[in-house]
Each structure stands twice: as C-alpha cells, then as structure tokens.
Length: 249
Image (cartoon, rainbow, N blue to C red; front, side, top):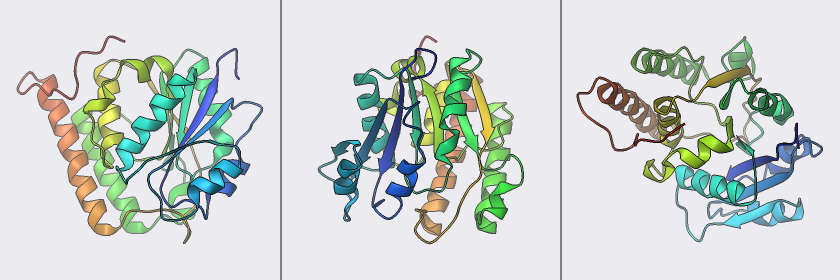
C-alpha cells in the first residue's frame, strides 16, 4: 500500500516459467498488496510456478491472446480492490524495482497512467534490444506522436501503471484481444483526457525473454499505425471510431 492506496501488480503470462521467479523476486512486497497472474493456456509450468510463489493465479481454458489476457488481469485487479494497477510482463525484460516509483507518480495526483520507457536515456541498445526492433520502435513512435499529437518516447513498453479510475471508465472490451490492445488502450485513455507520465526503465534482452517474431511484429506495426490513423480521423470529425466511445474522466 502506498499513501493509503492499494497496489496490485498484474502479470499477463504465456510460457513464462523460465523467467517468472526472477521477475517476482524483485517486486517489493512491502508496497505491493496483490500479485495476479493470468496464464493464457501456457504449455509449460507457468501456472504451477505462479501458485507456488503465492500469486493469485487465473488460468484461461484456451489461448485467448495477449489483449484478452490483460482484460482478465485488469478485471481481477479491480475486483480485488486495487486502487493502482501495474501491468508488468513476467519475462524479466523490465525492472520490477521501478514499481514503487511508477505507483508514486499516480499517487501524487499528477498522472493517471505511467509508461516505463526503454527508450528514454541510452538503455535500449545497451540492454540488448535488436537494432531492427529499436529502429521500428523509433519509426512507429514518431508516426504515432504525429498522429496522436503527443510527445511520448515510446508506446510499446510492457510495463505500465494505471489508476483505478482509468480502468473503470475505459471500454476495454472494445479493444483487440491481440498485441495491438496496448496501443488501443492508450488512445482510449488519450481520448478520455487522462494524463500520462513516463519513467526511464532499463531493459534486458536475453534468450529466455519473450519476444514476438518478425512476422507478428510486422502485423503489430500495421495495427499500431491503423490505430493512430483511426484516432486522428475520429478527432478530425471525419470518421467516428466506436472503439473510443464516450467515457467520462
């Protein structure tokens, strides 16, 4: 708990048994009140390990996709009383030690959501991010900033914090069940007028860390551009987009 606010960390997992324990070990249990893992029908021992580590564990009966996994995570966190929800990939690519800092940024009242950026500073390539991923990240982020009229350092991090109010008002059920969910959720929050902060986060790329392949990355990239363009057309009054809805901040 932080300043009287209950903190939950949600871990959307698929075949994360090799990295889960390392990730969980670095989570500050004095600050974090609830640890929730949704296992998206993994073929390894992710769920068994999660339970042995004391995580509240939900198991999908079939593989529903990365976006659907997050939807389950957020619904569970809200249902269990979280005031701030931190979404962290359990692949040990990001530093869990930043959870208190991210939650504090929301507790301060300055921000409704916080993104942990691998790009701020010089950590991405030094941490092993492949050059093609770095360049793709930069190109997509530039295009998104132009279309969304923002100045984010990146949109593609797997480490984010959200206030309860954001999660309760966004129509997340309208978002994709696949990887583009992350970007659709961001544009929903921007459309609703919520305030974003960023924090620099070191990254680690290694064999056991999860990563989508090149073909899925290309599909994701086109999905990201489509999301940003639809947002711009909606904002310009040219083509309304049902995904955005009319949430009240």
